Length: 218
Image (cartoon, rainbow, N blue to C red):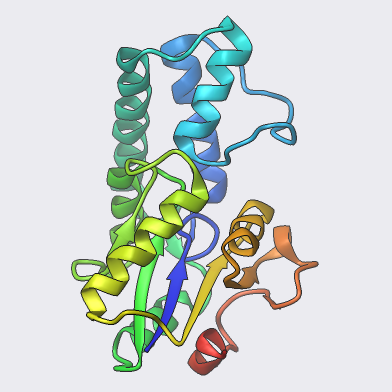
């Protein structure tokens, strides 16, 4: 059996722009921290990772649990409100829904989701875009703030769900250089989607012309 693991924003769902806008606005609303000009020097490209580093850079201290929960809850509330008002803000990347459904029906494939976003908002974005994830193995930044740890946990959950000791191959599909870096660190095959990761070895602009078998080749 092969494992195919997907990121969410910019990979399965075309939500990257609205997600970023609301995320940084939520931090400003709660903590009055301005959006950084660049994230190039940040260490962890996940919702909690970026938030924690922004607090350290601004206040020279660790974020408190109260602050963390306030930002996460405010972000989730605002993005869910936006999506309920306008579901077109979370649509599938071209061909993603068809591919996802096809892979889920393949008995030789385990489909999973590992995202650096917070769980409730990620699930809501996926549902709004039409993805049925009720039985999908998933790990989010509610599980860990570090991307490789999120991916490793998702892998462990997938092994238990599949009731196997190992997968014949593991492929991670993402849209950012941090996705590629994490995949490389784990020695997993990586497929890049979209303009932000165009220079990677295995790249597709979207899923509209891709065969499902491409995603679990050894």
